[in-house]
Length: 268
Length: 268
Image (cartoon, each protein chain N blue to C red):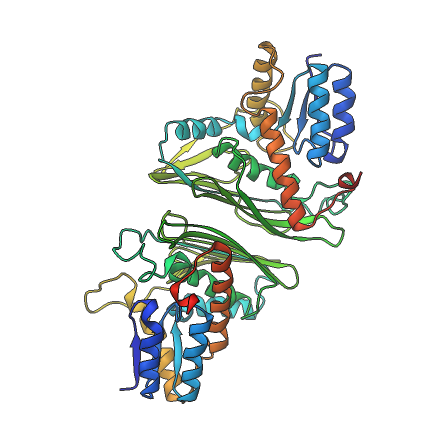
């Protein structure tokens, strides 16, 4: 066995990851990798100590559309980036565990992570200068909708909204001094981008078996990245390094602090 | 003469309005009516004292599309409103006065006012429970881009972004528990809305003379409202009453405080 793919619900990630990592297994763990920064550091430390590969499964990064976005940004095709916006909503509240805080990861960790990862990708892992967040929570304390304003160095900004309750757009846009890149819905598994009013499609691989979820074949891009990392003996992916996973967790903690979402894991 | 339409630049509104109001003239003044709440209260007080009609010229409210939106909301056609978003960007920085703080009103007072008015219309003039704002300013201190999160009672929210520098969408959306209403660009003079995926157009009156600005004939809706108010002897429009203009100014002051935009008028 080359690697274990941890896909249990997020509150169980810590124990599952540590179980396999301590058994010297490489781990690909679903996002959000941990419930907070404290848990994440524990997992990252144990991966380092055991010298295994570990990656947060943010599959979005490996879609062809995402690769093209990174290429365009590297070429400064739209000039200097000034503003990034990302939104992700998906009514999840019909799911039985969705409003139970000890079983659910809420709108931020479940959906907002895609927005945070997109913004952090565009701003190349830079830490924002400030974070402003507000949201609304269910009676159980699970966050239903969260809106965030991020300010970066050199007067650059980003905003995102995620919701497990109301239906918003699920698109993203990068605005530069010379143009813009629009990622059409669904931004979390992007198959179409618009640059200079020209739309380009990046269809996901054809399926040869029936799927439980649309877009599942898009997972192949991520799997190929993991394969390449393992073949090269890498312990983290250069596309989603540990530092980047840590940044997302730290930003998530700050947003949750402002939205007043406290998990039992935060109090341990 | 029935009424004076004050259309000088906003820093001169206070003096121009008071000049005409003290001469017992009715006044329709361009938005933003004043540079801050203090100036606005002075204008409102003088209108009351002189018993004249006064209205902030937020023409958007009188377009047929806006009337239809208010009808739909009154019927609770989209259920209970949970989220409102509005964006307005218009690259203004090529204008000679645009970066000079004593001549310009900046992105918030110049463009954001349209977002604030839209959100306040949807939430029927309610004061938000909290305002979170961040923005970036030009070296002259003029605000270029501003992003705001508003939280209202009963777990309802709104967000808006306005920019005089970068090109964003200029659309608005109202999301309710039973559906959504989308206002297509340009949201500041709306001619098309989408409800339940069905687009309805509300074309503005045909022009019979050449226009300096597109959509100018849409001003007729506002003029008709003013005419009706004057015929009825009203001193304020029931669609944009003074209390609503005051609320916009107070929200604007709080946003500017957080974005750190200070006008000379604030220090007098």
